[in-house]
Image (cartoon, rainbow, N blue to C red; front, top):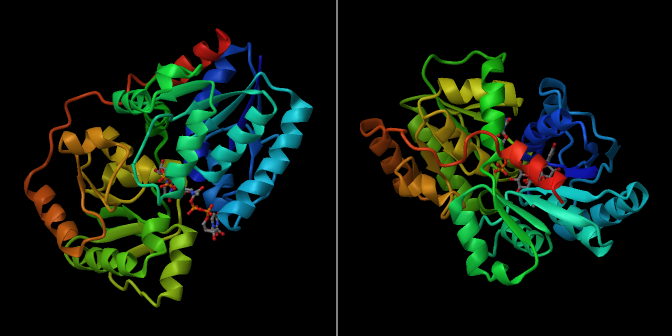
Length: 353
Ligand code: UD1
Ligand code: UDP
């Protein structure tokens, strides 16, 4: 069996690392990896392939830094050519980025089967590019690998039982990755305080709205006055802070780090504050409370169980959530994202087709 994996953005490298390990073990699958080039800085892309032993991409389309339409369109064209040449049995796509929808659409139009990992997630916010990408990808996928019960329920509510696609709840491949790489965690080469809060901010809804960006950074500045906030900064956010003249003097901004350093930072932090999807779950995997800097989340089970508070970009809410977690530490005593074998289930399922 031949599988063509399409990845392009940081979280997809981490997810694909887990699945590629399972594919390699199975021996009966040949995996071709296409990197769309969406993320391209060394510490947004190469570092993951180097540190995590992900097979090197067979193709790199080098498409990035464009508007949504231009980026997705060019990816579609490049991917179509590769799929026509390689004739895979399945195209495997992850998550909700422009690389995801481009991979799924290019494949489906060529009548190539599509498997979507992280299917069924919804924020119900159609202003998010990710929500559009994931809804459309789900609808044209043949196999929908859902990480949670909520994801399965979302698909059923949208009538997916009436479609010919297969819905499989396999758990979260990010949990597989966290379990495997945690023993390899490495301290980043920067001087860190003994006690710190880890933060990331990169979502378009926050970076492209000056009010939200200002409120979030004002709150992080205040908190950093008490416990240093360490923030590995996404290039998108660095650019936006510069153009908005926001200079977060108190916050410790560092360059983006690789996944092994990131695990070190997570496990040594007091608390996580983020608008990232992946990091909300990693906070849970490593038993850290999380404040989400968004108005909604796809990972509702974290909020329902008190591990995560949705604070949006509201200064007062962010500060109140921080104080709440200082006083009330959640007890992490349930399993929400499978058993760490989500990647194996994907491989077994594909081999049965
Ligand atoms: C993308 C995904 C988002 C995901 C995120 C993971 C879409 C629509 N969004 O957002 O869902 O959460 O990846 O991090 O696909 N840039 C660099 N160097 C890089 C990467 C990006 O300078 O290595 C710059 C680009 O030039 C661009 C900006 O950051 O100006 C945004 O990059 P883009 O890939 O469009 O979106 P992300 O915000 O990274
Ligand atoms: N991450 C990383 N280095 C960083 C910031 C994040 O390795 O400097 C990891 C993070 O631990 C998680 C993934 O990247 O596994 C999440 O990526 P991101 O926040 O960019 O995207 P999202 O999950 O929101 O789509």
